[in-house]
Image (cartoon, rainbow, N blue to C red; front, side, top):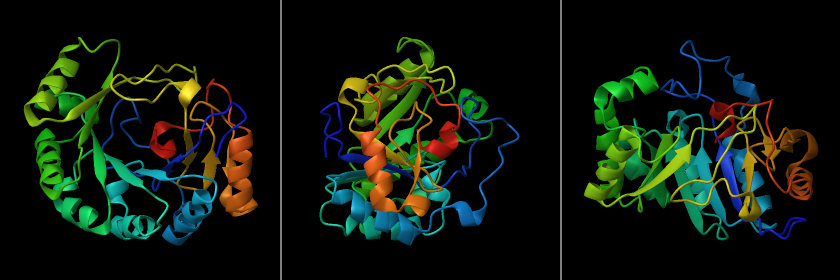
Length: 266
């Protein structure tokens, strides 16, 4: 499906939870955040219904996000249901990697094709400081488990402040080379002030070629991460929400004062 600026919108990012087992300092405060009520979070059948409608509009690529998607109970069952939709050609997931050792095989067997793992440093002390309590060894083991399970290519998402020359970015890059992983560098973004830049090593952040819509964990279709526009699939129904998101997708992102990365899926 094409938007009014002739961009082919074929990519849907689905946030399945606002919960996370880390507290990365650029994502949320140390004390955590008010969580959505359980009834506000979309059920798996609602998500699958939306995806089945979205493929009728040309969506063929889906990425599962969070919060941290692997903390949601039964996530492999959702993967299996989405993977069973014939029109979905590309099914991936973004994770912090903490639970990958436990779940990689189940995710692969359910039909997940590949994963992106967030990793901002190779220094164990720095990692714990950034995530506030994470253990980098769990992430490294999770990455290896994903590779062994065949969730390929495994890509690394590394947040940078200014440049890939930063020591943490260099260490992550060297780690990627050692294991043959693709590394994508993502400039630290500011939703409220509308600060974002193109992803180095990926295609995110390029408004002129943006091909994505987002579904939040409480059922809002967002045409752009850096926009307050959102359309409820529960209020409007999946078809109408998709149509409105498509027709109101802006030519370029501006700012977002109504959400945070932990509940928008990044």
